[in-house]
Length: 116
Image (cartoon, rainbow, N blue to C red; front, side, top):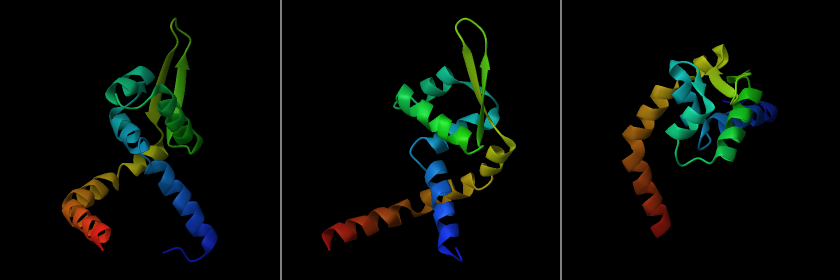
């Protein structure tokens, strides 16, 4: 799929970003429109504030989300998908479906690998 090494590295970097532990959760949470930082944090109770911040900064750096700060007291920060980020939502249901369909096969393969 990657004709040369540089293309493979670039694709791998992008897939690592959007496929990490928290990015997919954040991206899918933003599918219905802008969400405040604390609402994202509340929805992902297991993520630390620092990790959520790092995840959102990475997605912002890659042009997948935008960050809008409102000068209120306390400050309000909203995150939203960019047009590029919205295009990422197109393949996500297929990936989730594939994972759900094949999870038992993958678990069985892992068990076989461990026993071998």
